[in-house]
Length: 530
Ligand code: 0X9
Ligand code: ZN
Image: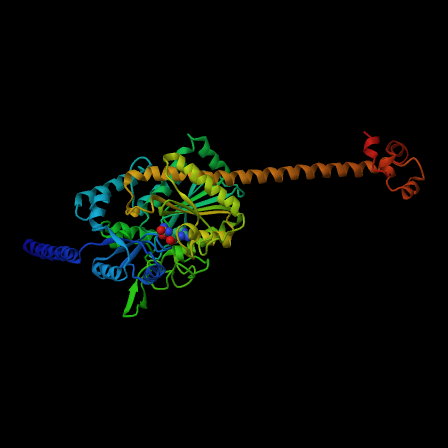
């Protein structure tokens, strides 16, 4: 028996070593993933870039910065198999370009550590997460990334700790069956305005997820100590959904130093296949920020399932999009603010995204709030944001969540935020961990401007309604008194009606005589009777 166990173990060892060898061999043979920075300088070059962007297989060429206008840089991650071909293409087309990253995997290891190589760090992470999950407090240390299960458990613990102020919600399930969870914060009286914040609709944009978690943390810990935060609990209802695309997020975490997984953008829905001109190719996932029912598939989106901007089969075809859209729709017209967190480029974007110079009603107020938000954000650490509509400052696209919320739900303040770093940096998706907390802090300063404006508008409306109600009540009272008094006082003279037919204005022009002679006809009883 013992010998048999050893034999099985030896076979297993040999097999796993062989597999491991094969993986490493492949990696070595494959060569590095590279990131190219290209500047299309002519209309033709721009069109070529756009053509590749809309049709490329994201496994081969993944656009971190899509082509938009002539002379604006385009960043593309190219897979090892395609780098030679891609460089040839750039040279043949005389595209000015540089290789921004020669070996992306190496960069990822430098920035986020090689969990695959270091069993110790992997088990340490699992250990730390377990302590966080099962440990005594309900806190998570900010400035770190966490797995989806840990994030959800943490939100549940916050809700358990403050049952009157917070509750957990599951808006639906992802394609792979994960619950999509969020937290609701605030005393809900059924009337207060609602603000929704989401993050992680794009899997690789980890800093956005951290930022949403930071907001939850601030709210949960600030209720007792920060009067400003407490006023939010009293005046609004805030929903925060930190990971709208949990399948994608978990996929990016599975093999973090492998650019193929760490740089995944879409959901992980079942494979769809299409003919790419040479063969039939099948790919997982939909760009959920192209799947909303706003000018679906019109611009900046692809019908090719292997594209990173694949819009899906139809508007709201994806379970994540459907769940989120239904959730927002059910909030009704109390929903006054919607903010979706993305990375990166430092932009504060308002609707609409499909065409330049196309705006919603109230654009002046929307722009004004954006300007003030960006200013407040900048005051924290000097970070500079641009604000405007997408096509004016970066590129056009349709099928996004904020445009849908603006157009279909009439949400007044609906913004897409692209967090740190700047457009120019190579490592937008692997933000240095030391930047996570400052990024979240400054973003909160901007978000507060939006929330404060919504509260101000709500209170102004309440005050107006209150004044109207008080006025209406006073008028009603006066009217009732007038009617009740009328029966009690009568006119002294028989000629009242005759005098008024001669002079319709007589009650006013001869008020003291009429008060004596005709108080009833002239509606002056209240002056006669106490
Ligand atoms: O393309 C998107 O879906 C978003 N950018 S991201 O790099 N995070 O993927 C939103 C883009 C901002 N809006 C417009 N360009 N209109
Ligand atoms: Zn994004």
